[in-house]
Image (tube, rainbow, N blue to C red; front, side, top):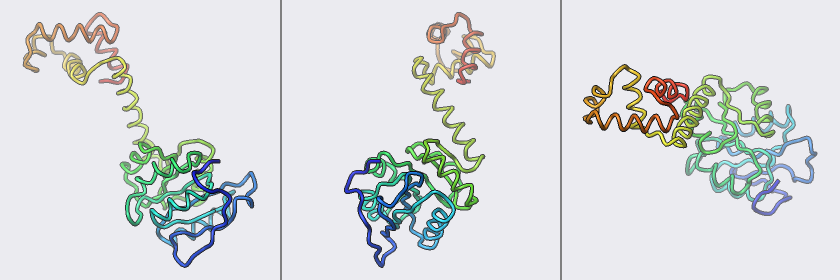
Length: 243
């Protein structure tokens, strides 16, 4: 476990909720997981801390309620897991994912938020979070899911949200594959028109091109998709998920 800073430090609780640390790393056994909670609501943070430690293999080594406190504590802690809220004083928790990953490259990061919109989960995944969960999740399920995250799995809390993430991930993979083949968005548009039954002349009229231009572009598409006919090009594009 590597964090950029001094390790094995005993933290002194202060009057502020911003930084409070609980135990030294020397006190942890191998089968328990060190957790850093970044959450600005003291009541929720203390409840989460109690539940994790009372019912799971977790030791909460610190709680931070703001950006500066989170970064300061991350530099001295050695967490296996960072639980991160989205709404924090001074900025979004999403913007903390990158600096936290640099400070503690071995730690897994799980977003825990009251937001249920799919877009939040998609943003978390894009930025490199290892888990995304809503605060209304059943405590037992949350504890088990967090352990999965620590063990290296990427976990999304709600099935509907997971579906949205998988759809976007699939689309991104198709786009990367398409880019590797060199098939442009314009060529995809041509294939869509071809799939609708339009011939070269009709496609040209639709795109304000000459028939010769369309024929040349279709030949380029055949070459990139390794096919010989219009029907094969459309079929291959569908197989690859482009249409």
